[in-house]
Length: 579
Ligand SMILES: Nc1nc2c(ncn2[C@@H]2O[C@H](COP(=O)(O)OP(=O)(O)OP(=O)(O)O)[C@@H](O)[C@H]2O)c(=O)[nH]1
Ligand SMILES: [Mg+2]
Image (tube, rainbow, N blue to C red; front, side, top):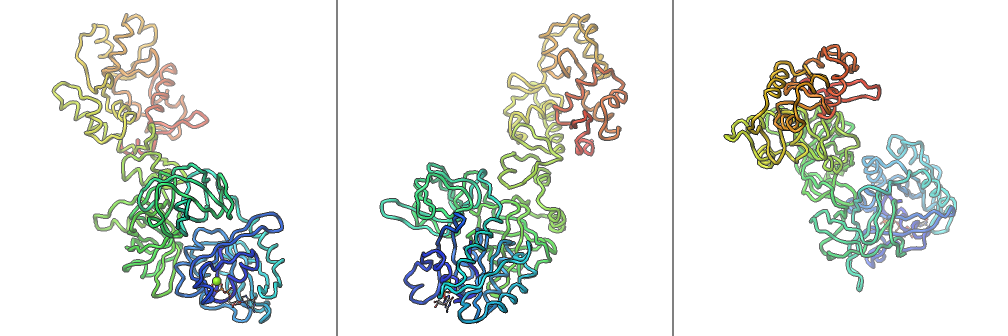
């Protein structure tokens, strides 16, 4: 739970009264009677639940520190003094929490010994009504006096209920720990602290320092001053690290499991039209415990492209806070794209803004890049798979890209005097990501692939094979049945070589079609209602049941068709448009 509220309203005194731990850790803070850095304290509630506090400063000069404290924390204790009521930084802190979208809130009206808490509470709750803090209903409030100890029991019960309402954080998945302190301890070395919000940290884990890419190892873990072997969210955690010195780390640097993207450009959108200042020069962007200088460029009414200094692990759906320190203004924006393409032509920005309004869309990434690894899409934070692309091995490939590669491969092979090209040469020349994708591209282009080369081999062939190749060349679906095929007296080796060479296509064992089978099938099936049944396909293609089933299964394997649980099929949409 993070505290929030105006300077001197009693946040630290309340945390101290609840936990017995002094949150103002610095001599200077105690001398000036003011919080400057973040404070940390914890206690056990009557239910047995642990609660940890991140105590923030209220002074207007320390709003960035306040934001780094509340950024990763799921709930807030909003402190308002009974003698002063709603004040400037109450307003500013609530504005920031609202922009962050914080929903879990408990209001403490402190210094109840100096004034009546009821009217202050009524005013505060009224002002919270239109904010995210009241999105799940009016927040509970408690009148307290840290000085006299009044209301603390009631506050503890209210905290218990507040924690109850916070949904469990996932204990699996990637970790991104925003560092809020880094220091060294004699004998132990480098220690950082932060709030673990998702995933699990365990002793021995290998992590990466986001800002530098430096690999580090978890040497020891502490939570609430106790040594532990592993920590699950949501918890305060101190991580003793091997492989890095404390001066290389600081507040706002993230410690993460390998695999995060650290983009230097992201596209963000807001629920409301964005003010002009977000796209006119430098703004401060806050995320987690980090605050960086970003440069915004407007894409549309509610969309901005942000240039970031890099080294921030970000993914789609992350909420960022943009702040103009001069205006003391803040807005919340959501990351929609962490891999945007540079804009080159007039109108690109407006087109991008239009696509962003639909939210994060992995198909757009595949469309732009042609092919994207499944790991990259996961790291980017998409919660669904692309629907217009085919997953081939580890790669999502756009159908248009596959068609372009197939055409390019045919050119490369036919331009080669030998009639064949080594697989690896073709793969590199076309920029195809891996061998599995290359095999599909070769099949698409009707090029035989095998024994490390793509293209046709010369070799003697029997008149029977020539006749079969000719027959299927004239009509790729004039598939001989088992008896007719046996009658030709072709050896298994001969048939298999003809398939490798692309002169025949093996739909299934003993079922051979002509090289043009894909083009023919797609052209005919595109004319059917979608989805279509096996029997509709059979009639439209004018073939027997013996041939249609292996044919459709072959098309499934080529990622040209998609089968539904009722055994109906649809052509993948971009197959149709690209034809
Ligand atoms: N009478 C009375 N005084 C209080 C109470 N709570 C805090 N104080 C006093 O108010 C002053 C400010 O308290 P803090 O807890 O430092 O206030 P804060 O909100 O943490 O201030 P910043 O961290 O600087 O924003 C101190 O002198 C406290 O002793 C209370 O319930 N009653
Ligand atoms: Mg304080």
